[in-house]
Image (tube, rainbow, N blue to C red; front, side):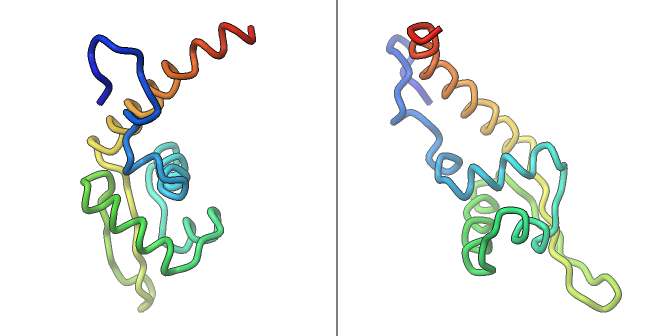
Length: 108
């Protein structure tokens, strides 16, 4: 979280979300509402191991929930963002916009 009396800095960005793959996952999941492991893997072009690692980080931090079930005798894992995950993502985007605002004014 940024310091209250100082200009926002890149160091203040949420490091859980800021990692490139997790940013892509959250950017995909929020508008989609939910997505299966296979869908995320295909759309984001990730390996099983890489996606699994990043989903565990997001789940551990309370940003996503996981649902495991069987569909036609096949396992299916589905992810959804939590209210906390959406709040954190919105805060991340808002802070990034504030950081970039002076640059936009200079180039506008």
